Length: 104
Ligand code: SF4
Ligand code: F3S
Image (tube, rainbow, N blue to C red; front, side):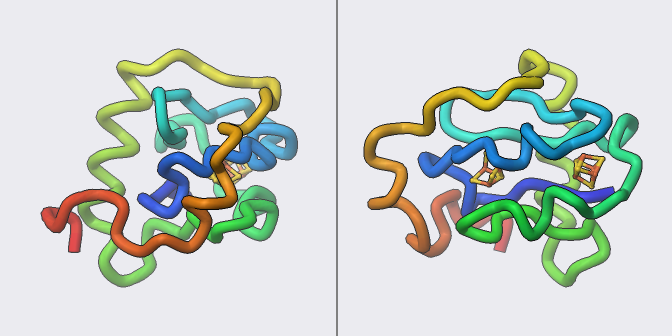
């Protein structure tokens, strides 16, 4: 399965939502997550994300994000259509470590 990481925070471009064949993204205020039980591991979303926030869960250092995606996919609402990104999305694109150090 694939996971969304902190590079998404406050960028939230939602290009990923447009390409996902199974609509398995869930929307928080500042970022999205992927439902691990619904993702079919197709990988189509990964190259579509401008800040490269989406990674395979097998990548090094993903343990915290695997838990985060699983937890919040159960709590946040499904998103299946792209909306307008935040107006300051470009300012957050590439900012490192947007989530506190517990995931490092
Ligand atoms: Fe959707 Fe495929 Fe990305 Fe999984 S890997 S979230 S199924 S586009
Ligand atoms: Fe986030 Fe990238 Fe999707 S910034 S909303 S994971 S396209």
